[in-house]
Image (cartoon, rainbow, N blue to C red; front, side, top):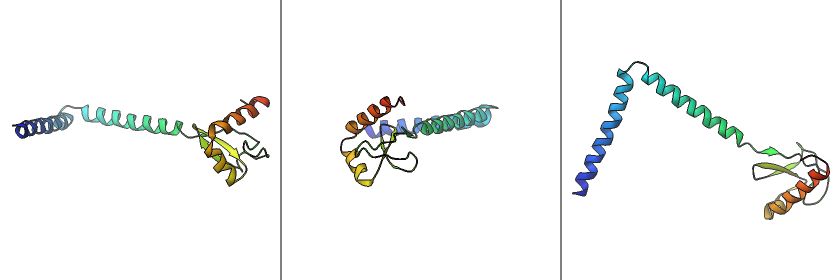
Amino acid sequence: MFKKMWLIIAVFLVGLLMVQEISYALIPGVGAAVRRVKKNMQEDQKAEEAKKVPVNVGNTVCPVMGTKVEPGKALTVEYGGKLYNVCCPICVKEFKKNPKKYVTIVEKQMKGKGQE
């Protein structure tokens, strides 16, 4: 009995899909409208993904070692959608072990310089 019920549901759903495709072809403008909506949705999705690109906070002092680093030339660690500059691969490992600690250090450094 359940097999028949699932078969009926499957046939019904396939029928709905076919009706939808046929209506796109028969009703002028519907197919084009659906394509525009799909295209707009894809563009919106790409824009959202672009927003997720991490931003470099621009710290000039390594939060782990306390040495100077040059933003753009330094190694970076991503955490919480932001990139933090560190001086060496060892600092990358240390930062990843306790990121909240080092983020707090960077935030204090940036506030001290007025660079929030």
